[in-house]
Image (spheres, rainbow over the protein chains, first blue to last red):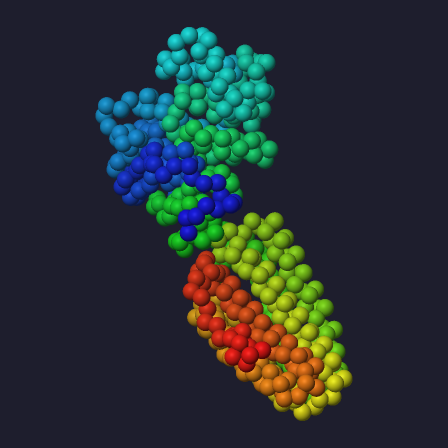
Length: 265
Length: 241
């Protein structure tokens, strides 16, 4: 069953970058996420799919403690990054988010220049020692985000003046500038046109060489196109997790089947 | 699957394709039975009609493939929907082959009519018609298993193909005997043998359809080797041919 498939790029690694065990999330009295166990593999794109309100974004936000910022939100269970519990008291959430970067649904560049948008993370985390080093980091990040050629002549113009697709790639460049280990993407293409979507998807596939990518998407076709692993969430449960090819051709759970074939919303 | 798609037009598309496959199956079954009847009763007109009707079967296969391609492009089917579309294409292709064999039987029936070796043809014609009837039943069950998603029936078809193989073995032996008795029988027996062999192949296609049903339901093709009884290669050795 697990032999190499021609149509499916192989998962490069079997080692888990992040591990979640028995994760529960409550918003006040509302038990939003129940008993989620999942391994996020290194150098792999993992897609979370499921209907609205199923808990996939909530779970994504647990992975870099974005839920800390929501009043009344309580997370139980264990989530580790490289064997270190990210909810440990000694972990600084700001440092954690440098290691677990995030890209949001709507492109949200800072009202600053393109250069400063990308340089922001390395600067506040003190990741570079000189201007030259910072320049290099900015260029490298923009190249990784496949944006360098389009913006290299106008690095000082405002990031908000770029097109939607370019802005989103700028946000990806900003996220990778801190050299994160994991990149979380919450519907990164839902505000983009098909061409920009294709560019971001191509980019996600390239990012897989260096990072572990977790993407939440409402487009099942997108999940099928970009990911190697897929997790299906429904009503706060992780229903099924497996190879993307298997999930889309022969899902084990009838709920997964119903969802991906368009029978339940 | 009893559950409906949210987009109901998707269900209608899938049902329409499935209906085409069932229609094609019906046409192929008729072609087999008509060809076998034409052979036994030496009915040249009926044989001619079978040959003509094959065009409609071929056209239906093309139509099914076109519809399947359209559905893949427009609906991007996944999981069991995807397997249904894939299996539809394979089943249509199997049915088309079976239709060709029926047409070939009709063609050989017309050739045999020219030979006029009534004795041998009448004897073998009855056996061949029984074999054709058994194959038609097999095919019909395979298609019923498909339409109703009956796993057990599909598995049963795979096993029952052995009976067809045994009928073929018996006929092979019979034709061999006739030919050894009198070389003037060779032409007729060669035609009859091809008819028997083609009918045996029809059984294999019915089995292939049953395997597609297994794939459609379980997501995996059956791994166990299906029971086979076609062993004329050994018979030939025994006969010293």
